[in-house]
Length: 456
Image (cartoon, rainbow, N blue to C red; front, side, top):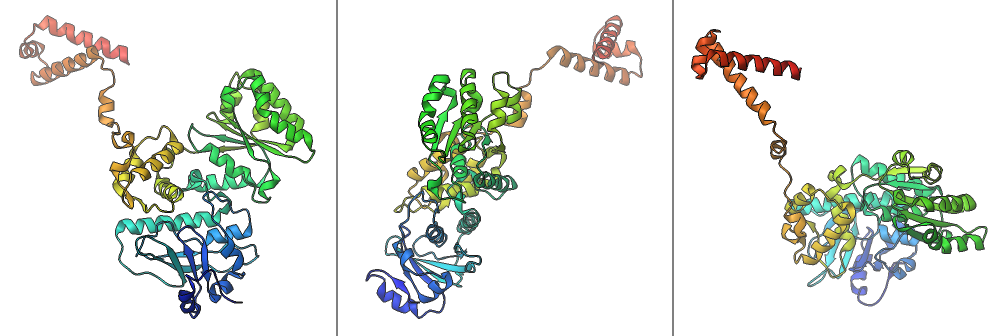
């Protein structure tokens, strides 16, 4: 098998790299492959031309074997000029036993910016790096592992994370993507439900053309007539062919008008499994069934598989990975941003995220535009995040209403008890110490005893 290369710019280097016994390949800064030596092609078990002809796309989903293989060979996003990074690469191929994982050393080349990246097998980089850089490399490795384990879900930020909640969510999303059942996604507004629905809609066992595009419908805006109008293209497609199938994304299902619920239930009964619904709701299935304005039979039909989407504040441990994923995802080819600084990440970790994942995504995009350095700093974050101050638990407790009469009564009784103790129970002496008459002291003691009995 001969080594593969393209163009004249790589040939002088190729003559040297061909003599190396370890796998070597070269990638341009925009992700295109320029060269594979003989050892690399033998390792991958494929010809070079399909990879050399492959063109990257920002939101490409690995629909074909060549897409999956090419994406798995890409260098880490955090590469900067003059800073090699070692990272394990597990090529994805459609064989019973794919090529073994190898530790690849990615070496960035370029005078002012990264123009080419040379990947050399079974090499390690022992150069010095800051603690912050080590963290970024670790995050990049974890993201690579998630992408390799879930290749069909590698574009979905809400599924990123190392926590048990994130892993459980990925497994549920993969299960939902494998079947054609209706799915009920439960989560707060902004939880990334649209992206999760897209991941579930892209069935890994079928080609992308097997299912139609995902049709979104905002149920909060629908009455019966508007719902029929919104569903008309889907109904026409399903009615025109007995084998056609379609998926509808029902946003805000828990806010669907009462008069629109019966028509939707009828359409589900009419087309059966050929009409698949992925519903988004802030109410769980149990809460929807208890609701007076929601049709229980409709909810049962739509909730074949219920998936609870945890909020960002419930999985704050996943925030570093999610942020790194968003930075790598949003970075433009000419934009050099490695990651986020620890002080900036601390600010993100204490923020309550009322807009959940969608708000975080918008915040990272804004910060990347504001940043002029390789690492996002606190001053690059949106003002709402920079200026947020977590509530003080002690101050919150002090803000509770005070029962002044009860507080004064307790203080008075404590003073009386102290005076009686110092007077050895002599009430006349206690009254003298308190500066009141004996009769007044007795009335105060009786009133205090009556209040204690009432509270008991």
